[in-house]
Amino acid sequence: MVQNPDDVRRAIHSLLNDVVEQSFQLMLEHPAFEAEASAIVHEASESIRRLVAEVHGLRPPSPDAPRLLHVAYDQRLRRISEAAETEAMTYHRTIAGLRAIGTRVN
Image 1 (tube, rainbow, N blue to C red):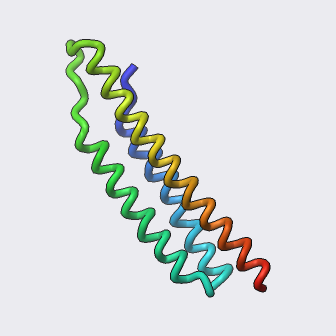
Image 2 (image 1 turned 30 degrees about the vertical axis):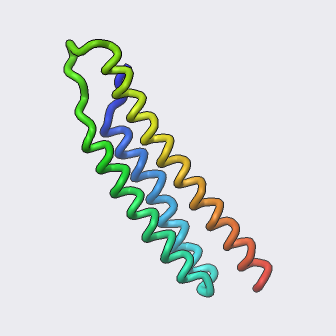
């Protein structure tokens, strides 16, 4: 079954916008990590642009296309979704680590 590219775009925005929000919160909680948090905001924003552009670049197969093309399209959308999840988790781990350091320092 072919996934909906709009759902994938929304998932990308949701996952990585949460990273951006958490980074801003980190800046407020621990101003000493402003540079690190700012870098995460920049990188997460770039990830959003890159992944959404990748979704936009995909052309869905026509309804009468062979099933294999539909499966390949679905797998590509799934891979993009998984990449967004992986990137978001990496950023969240970094933010959590900075918070832990900031809490020990304060």
